[in-house]
Image 1: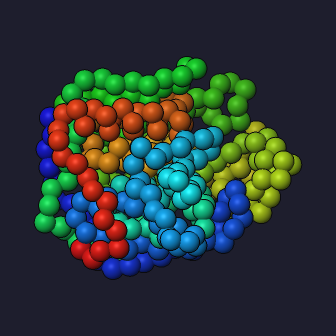
Image 2 (image 1 turned 90 degrees about the horizontal axis):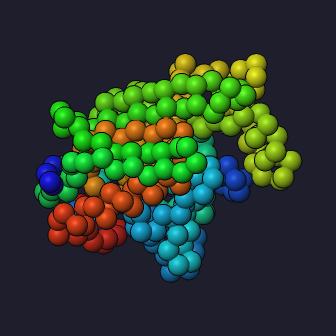
Length: 297
């Protein structure tokens, strides 16, 4: 069953600058208005020919700690926070130009992207956005973790996450549930930050990765609590996992109506479910999305 709402783009261009967590490279991400049915398209302005990649599950490459997009020579790393900001604000059509491979880590949340996009304003466009209603359970799972899509009796969009790393983990079991709207996303999810354990942080830095990332640029958690930082929410880790879930599932390319729950899931399982949802939508309707770029709304 497919329903519709009007598509949206931003009213003006905006940008966010920072440096990548993994590469340490300075990067500027610029968001531009886009025409109807463009979708979200990433563009590498630092490469010859300005290669681009639609932000869909067809080009998704989920790895540990992040989601990447790859199309030929064009690679875009750690896109989940950008995608979550766009999805959470219901921005459907946008050209995202970046002058480096990896998106900026910032404070580990997507709050800066949200604030920049909100400052640009929203435009309602004269075409309909396909909407996929979940009518039967769908689950992907691996090694005791799973992500599932369930029907929503009241036709709303809900996300939930259950985090449980076991009794030996310094990160305590916690959960979070969101009845998703732009307002609730901005208040309850966008500020939630990336987290690692102290042991993970020390291992990454010892291996030469992320040495430049300070304890103020993400949450580092030890047996004594968060290191040189403070939680914004009691269950901030579960909220951030929900942020990742929203960003990753947006690669399905449709508005979703259903209940999406993850138990210990991560980017790989999120990407698998996004692909399943995109395939399901293709089997239910013949609406196709084209990808014209850099064309004003």
